[in-house]
Image (tube, rainbow, N blue to C red; front, side, top):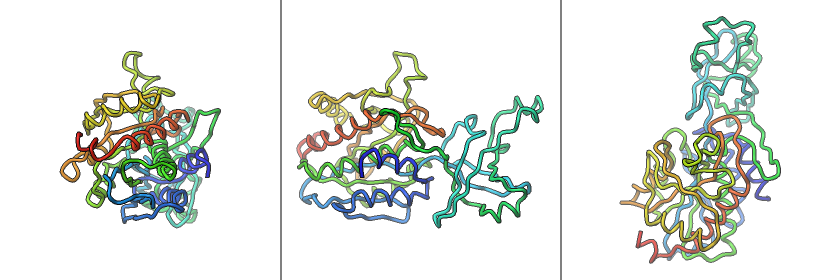
Length: 352
């Protein structure tokens, strides 16, 4: 499978937090010829390469498989569906968006988040804030019984219906947070077949990050990593911040995060990132955030303290129906990950 094809499959796959089965299956297929797998009931997938030697430090490569989405909460008498968010959304961007409802068993429905025609709106409705209490999903049913006959169920997960596109290296689609990270981890694992790093690696495709980093917390009770790299799809700020504050720019290369509201990444590990990027002529940019959060927050606390960094792909409009990213930034993250693994060894990790 070509790398771009892998990214497309991962973006189009449906995987709200807790329902990540399609993504783990893609990962298994991509790595089946050189890895073994361990998967738990939370849908965390640990990928163990056959080329590990067993007598070297273990570095975890983490990316989360889940995406923000919704869940059907109730079927209303008129046949529309009340729903709740799974993860964080900008509610103002939701009305008139196309969605897909599905079940792990294969049932699929198409719907639209209802937006009232302006012809029908009162002045009060025009000025009312958007909230989940006044939003619903319309699947075209005429009443509640009809919705049930069409296949609607309470508890159905819902994702954007936003097909992936590649326009001359610009990528458009959903769930780039964090399917781009998943693609990067899988690609690095594959490339390492022909490279002998100074460490062993384990790929972790973790679950339920968007609802509180739940999957990785379970993983760290099982995987005793000596260091970790978290690959993320990170909110690009180049169209929203003043020039002097831009730290995550499209086509700006790998984003290395110093800190956010959940974690201070291991400073000596971050310093090594600068050195490796310079030695390998890899574009990097560095971010300090007041908000946000990621799996690194749990990894740094695991096993008495685990050195961890967060590397990311700049993504415009994450947690919305369409994201934009640059393929060159994805490739830079792959190159960076490989270069870091070639640099790391037991002596360097001890210095962290």
